[in-house]
Figure 1 (spheres, one colour):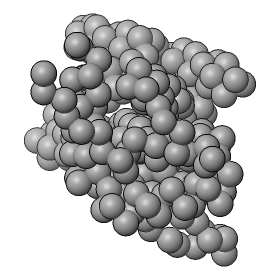
Figure 2 (spheres, rainbow over the protein chains, first blue to last red):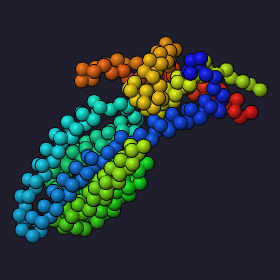
Figure 3 (tube, rainbow over the protein chains, first blue to last red):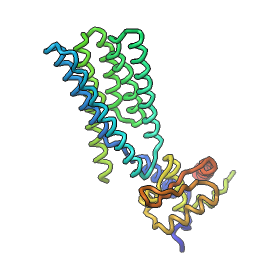
Length: 198
Length: 95
């Protein structure tokens, strides 16, 4: 008898459906690698800029931010490779991708407007405000609490940012990166390792 | 009591497993379905084609790095059939 044509009872059918849905659902494809790479790079940029402005009164340290272009190039090739090797496409990763696209567009437009109206002092607080959004939403979509907390931390630091000096705003951003990228990144890495071991 | 008839296309272990996997994801490669269902490639291929003939799934054949790749995706007819199948199951179970 063909094993595929075995008569199933209604309960067996429901059990099979549940088990298959769980098998598909439990697949965590987020390794945390990009969170960690971006987290550490932005943290270094923020600390370098804070130290150079605060201790050396050297305002041109913003050149260090050009290093993000290198990571963007790496990310492009990394995501292309990951897309090729992917065996399954889930709705969550697609939605998260769009959430980050929305963040980049919103942030770019905001910077353009702030520069245009000569309100550049608002750029750093604007990062903290907008940055909370993709982090919080990624946490909700992935059902991953550390990202939700990271998003809330960004908003709390955003409240503090108008009261901090320009140099200290980089420290606030450094804290935001630790809360929203580095800590969740390590926890995602652990979760990925644990769930893909089984 | 109103008993709904169970769709014979879906009332088969492997075909139901495939549809249940596809309902949870946007699209899946043949190798993913094989890995999750523990089926043989030949049998899985036959059952997938039955689902395709019933109009429940779409199959995309393409090349990835010079290797053939088969991608399966549930369509709206398949989603409706799955929903009706689950409703029919419930009519039996909630007796």
